[in-house]
Length: 244
Image (spheres, rainbow, N blue to C red):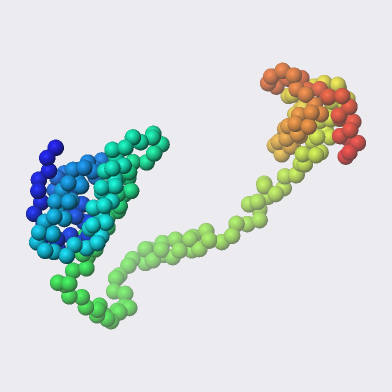
C-alpha cells in the first residue's frame, strides 16, 4: 500500500494528534487498525518538511514521533494472547480527539457571530375573553370540572374493608395445626393438610408451615403431587408442640 505525500503547512495542525488524523483521513486508513509503519513514515516526512522550511517544531510533535517509533518496535515483537495491542492507547486518543473536533464544529455552528439578538419586547396582556359560548357548553364544562375534583378526593374507608377485614393467620399456628393432625392420624396426604382451609390466608400460612417443618426435618413427604404421604419424623411433633 502506497501513501500519497501531503503538502500541509504546519499552521494547519493544532498538534500531533491533529496531524495524525490528517494523515489517516488523507490516506483513508482504518483508525481501528492503523498500519503504524506507514503512518510513522508519513509523519517523519512531515517533520522533515518543517525542518527544511526552518519552522520551529514544538516538542509535542517530537514526542509523538518517539512514541510512534516505540509502538512500531513493540508491534514487531511477539505478543502474548492476553497482552494489549500497543496501538490501542493511541487509537483511543485519536478517537476522542476526533469526537472533540466534531463537537467543536457543531458548537461553532450554534455560536455564529453574524446574527443579532435582542431582548423580547414586553407585550401588554389582554385579559378580556372575547369568545362566545353556548350556555350548555359552559354547563358541561362545569360538570366536568366538578367530576375531576371528586376524583382527587381520598378513597372512602369502605373501599379497604375487603382487605383489612380478613383474619390474619400466623405460620406458627399452622405449624401446630399440621403437627397435631399428624399426631392424631399418623400420616396424611399432602392435599389432606389443606382440607377445611377455605380462607386464602389460612392456606398460604399452612403451606409455609409445611415448608418450615420439612426444612427443620420434623416431617417428611413421600411421593409426588397432592397424593404425597406426609409423616412425622420421630418425636419431632411432640418437641415442637412442647416449645409452643
